Amino acid sequence: MSENTLTRLDLAEAVHDEVGLSRNDSAALVESVLGHISDALVRGETVKISSFGTFSVRDKAARIGRNPKTGEEVPIHPRRVLTFRSSHLMKNRVAAGNRKG
Image (tube, rainbow, N blue to C red):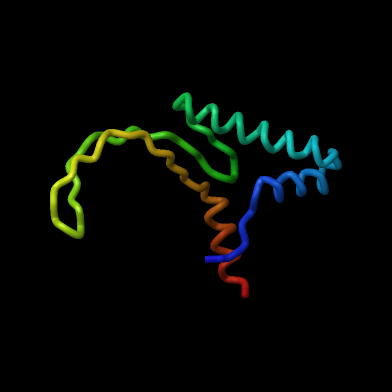
Protein backbone atom coordinates (compact mmCIF):
# COMPACT_ATOMS: atom_id res chain seq x y z
CA MET A 1 0.00 0.00 0.00
CA SER A 2 1.27 3.45 -0.82
CA GLU A 3 2.21 5.86 1.95
CA ASN A 4 0.67 8.75 0.01
CA THR A 5 -2.81 9.86 1.02
CA LEU A 6 -5.00 12.36 -0.79
CA THR A 7 -6.57 14.70 1.78
CA ARG A 8 -9.21 17.43 1.73
CA LEU A 9 -6.39 19.97 1.79
CA ASP A 10 -4.85 18.33 -1.30
CA LEU A 11 -8.19 18.48 -3.10
CA ALA A 12 -8.66 22.14 -2.16
CA GLU A 13 -5.14 22.93 -3.35
CA ALA A 14 -5.83 21.18 -6.68
CA VAL A 15 -9.02 23.23 -7.13
CA HIS A 16 -7.03 26.38 -6.30
CA ASP A 17 -4.33 25.50 -8.87
CA GLU A 18 -6.61 24.30 -11.66
CA VAL A 19 -9.65 26.56 -11.33
CA GLY A 20 -8.05 29.64 -9.84
CA LEU A 21 -10.35 30.12 -6.87
CA SER A 22 -8.84 31.50 -3.70
CA ARG A 23 -7.59 28.91 -1.21
CA ASN A 24 -10.51 29.68 1.13
CA ASP A 25 -13.07 29.40 -1.68
CA SER A 26 -11.44 26.18 -2.90
CA ALA A 27 -11.60 24.64 0.58
CA ALA A 28 -15.23 25.73 0.94
CA LEU A 29 -16.09 24.18 -2.44
CA VAL A 30 -14.49 20.85 -1.50
CA GLU A 31 -16.30 20.85 1.86
CA SER A 32 -19.59 21.66 0.14
CA VAL A 33 -19.26 18.82 -2.39
CA LEU A 34 -18.30 16.31 0.30
CA GLY A 35 -21.15 17.55 2.48
CA HIS A 36 -23.69 17.05 -0.33
CA ILE A 37 -22.39 13.52 -0.95
CA SER A 38 -22.50 12.68 2.77
CA ASP A 39 -25.99 14.12 3.24
CA ALA A 40 -27.34 12.13 0.29
CA LEU A 41 -25.86 8.90 1.68
CA VAL A 42 -27.31 9.59 5.14
CA ARG A 43 -30.74 9.94 3.47
CA GLY A 44 -30.19 6.52 1.86
CA GLU A 45 -29.74 7.87 -1.65
CA THR A 46 -27.28 6.44 -4.15
CA VAL A 47 -24.49 8.77 -5.29
CA LYS A 48 -23.30 8.09 -8.83
CA ILE A 49 -20.30 9.99 -10.15
CA SER A 50 -19.93 9.30 -13.86
CA SER A 51 -16.60 7.70 -14.87
CA PHE A 52 -15.69 7.30 -11.18
CA GLY A 53 -18.12 5.06 -9.34
CA THR A 54 -21.24 4.64 -7.25
CA PHE A 55 -21.62 5.03 -3.50
CA SER A 56 -24.64 3.40 -1.89
CA VAL A 57 -25.94 2.45 1.53
CA ARG A 58 -26.99 -1.14 2.19
CA ASP A 59 -28.99 -2.47 5.11
CA LYS A 60 -27.50 -5.66 6.54
CA ALA A 61 -29.77 -7.97 8.49
CA ALA A 62 -29.04 -9.33 11.95
CA ARG A 63 -27.21 -12.64 11.99
CA ILE A 64 -25.26 -14.94 14.23
CA GLY A 65 -21.50 -14.67 13.91
CA ARG A 66 -18.71 -16.60 15.55
CA ASN A 67 -15.78 -15.33 17.59
CA PRO A 68 -12.82 -16.82 15.68
CA LYS A 69 -10.68 -17.04 18.81
CA THR A 70 -13.14 -18.84 21.10
CA GLY A 71 -15.64 -20.27 18.63
CA GLU A 72 -18.45 -18.71 20.69
CA GLU A 73 -21.56 -17.63 18.79
CA VAL A 74 -22.17 -13.87 18.92
CA PRO A 75 -25.20 -11.95 17.65
CA ILE A 76 -24.39 -9.34 15.01
CA HIS A 77 -26.94 -6.53 15.06
CA PRO A 78 -28.57 -5.12 11.92
CA ARG A 79 -26.70 -2.15 10.51
CA ARG A 80 -26.27 0.15 7.53
CA VAL A 81 -23.04 -0.09 5.57
CA LEU A 82 -21.53 2.14 2.91
CA THR A 83 -20.48 0.43 -0.32
CA PHE A 84 -18.53 1.72 -3.29
CA ARG A 85 -18.50 0.20 -6.74
CA SER A 86 -15.99 1.70 -9.12
CA SER A 87 -16.89 2.33 -12.75
CA HIS A 88 -15.30 0.26 -15.50
CA LEU A 89 -13.41 3.35 -16.67
CA MET A 90 -11.92 3.81 -13.19
CA LYS A 91 -11.03 0.12 -12.93
CA ASN A 92 -9.28 0.28 -16.29
CA ARG A 93 -7.47 3.49 -15.38
CA VAL A 94 -6.19 2.01 -12.10
CA ALA A 95 -5.17 -1.23 -13.83
CA ALA A 96 -3.28 0.73 -16.51
CA GLY A 97 -1.46 2.66 -13.78
CA ASN A 98 -0.41 -0.61 -12.18
CA ARG A 99 1.21 -1.79 -15.42
CA LYS A 100 3.42 1.28 -15.64
CA GLY A 101 6.62 1.01 -13.77
